[in-house]
Length: 295
Length: 295
Image 1 (cartoon, each protein chain N blue to C red):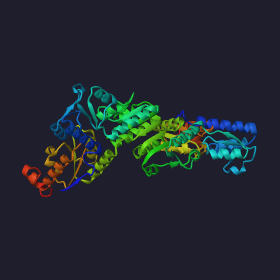
Image 2 (cartoon, rainbow over the protein chains, first blue to last red; image 1 turned 120 degrees about the vertical axis):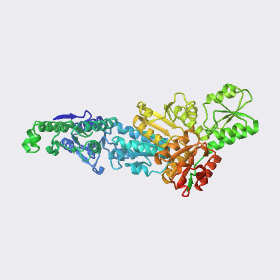
Image 3 (cartoon, rainbow over the protein chains, first blue to last red; image 1 turned 90 degrees about the horizontal axis):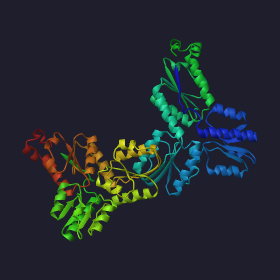
Image 4 (tube, rainbow over the protein chains, first blue to last red; image 1 turned 180 degrees about the vertical axis):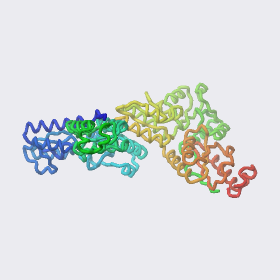
């Protein structure tokens, strides 16, 4: 069985950077808080917890002298102010691409545009972007964009992991509603490349595995894209969730992973599928035996 | 037979204004040149010719003291300069909505954006807009937009009579290619309203008549829109081109007209179709007799 791993699978640059910054802070200070999950990946979270990281949702726990890591998604300026006011040491691991969205959104507001954020209003990145604006408008579905009124001017930024097709459709709808439309395409190139590569790979293989947290927005989007091209697409968090029956009759398997999936989790899945291909695991589990040789 | 005439049929405000300005100039000066056809309608052109208007393509004929009318489509600033240099009296009947496109295009250029004009590069309005820019880019088809390279910044304006669907598609493609996209939707509301009303009317009637010059860009677009909704759509310049056979079995007829179609041409067509409905013309021509009563 041929295994094709997407070149763009796994940690993006911003996530790698945030994990490195968190590990450095832990090495320096022994322990640190992180506001929310550093990345949407349970196994990586467990690893960091063992290194001394405490993941908190409520900032009330933070006291003077504590180290607090801001994850790659970023936060509203008021959060940083609050933490500094408490006397905490803030390690701001906000992805520079997300910081760029903050700056562009504020620039649009300064230029007098009402600002629309295309993205999930519950996603921390979008909450962080909105926190930089006076009166943000947020839309996450085509219906919400359609429901917007006609406007003389509008500025647009988007969640860095937005689905490209939604972005395209939203902008085409806005072009007719808005007389002067200024759009910053802030979908980060890692996201675009990963989505495009997933779509292509899904069309070339018999089975697709998409690895990443079930609560990871960008992984879920990769899964949706893959599924739309190849019905034999499966979203797993780790090798333990893989059902050998999925590979029955398959001659090729494509593997990709979200931006928050560590390399070692991907490696484990690749190795597991390789072992399946050798027939060992398959016959051992008594599944798919007829196809054993071929796999 | 029911006849429905689109409310938005015929002369738009800018064309009405240009014709009035031309007639005033003729009343004042006795004769005047017009650069190109004042409007794309042969019968109106004939009427103006009788009033003393001379339609020219070559400006070499212009001498000191001549009156020259600039039609609603507008021209490049170099044309006005040339005419003034010759000592001509220039009556600038450029539609104020087109002047607004010139201003927006120049503003984008001043702001450092490469400027894309969405429109037909051979249309005088687009030639006029392009004449206001140092390095205009022009695209008139989806293929041309797709062929544009990725760009960090791009400003967009469009021909005031652009097809709404092309505009929408072009902008959605550009949103993915361009990091910072500033779009002025300069499709004039008369055009949008006329196109929307045509699409709606075409879906409600058995036969559609679209009146206007065969060389009129906006009329041709109305015809294409109508035809896509209702295969029994016909583009005519006047009542003389109507074939009574088109109405066989029809219970309703929709009528619309391009921005350059005078009211009297529309009235003639409406009267002609009414007479068909009474059966007079139909039976007289010996066409469609079986349906005569019903029509």
